Image (cartoon, rainbow, N blue to C red; front, side):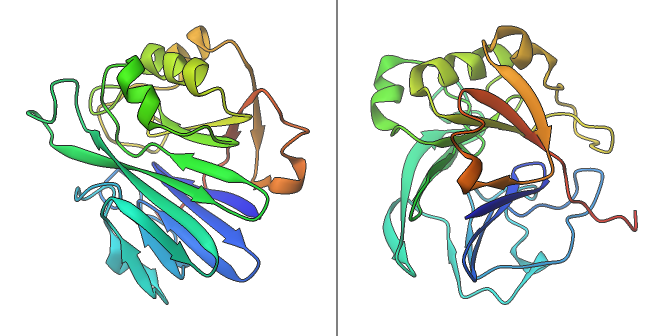
Length: 213
């Protein structure tokens, strides 16, 4: 199983020949690269998370809560809020959890809920946690560190933060790194066979974005 980062909150996860894509985007300052995927999960219906037309060969889009099974891969959509006031500012978002053959992955979407015991009771443990850290529209870096401590995944992959190309008014990952008690490394992609090798680390995956812009 392989994980590639296409930028923003978008990841391409490949289990053999089957490909799952999370939160395809547009309008963030750069364009998503051309990509094929069998299945797409969309955490919510905002332009920077639901650019489905930018993906080819799609068999099914999952954009609701509940339990799903696609090609033997279990997917669970868990309801969450996009802000700290029960969705009154930005509505709802969905946390998607994937159970691959040898790895469980949790993508927190645009979660904005203040860390709480009640919230953490709804979120499963995961080998890999994909978490927004840029603040303003999601949890910020300090809150993200609290999430990491509570969920305690083997590997943390930050997403939805300011980068050199990003034009959104969000913050970078510095605050998250300040509060997260983990070593950070940079990789081009993540292979599940190396999950134990990177146990306990924050893994920044290099963005694969459209180089024409």
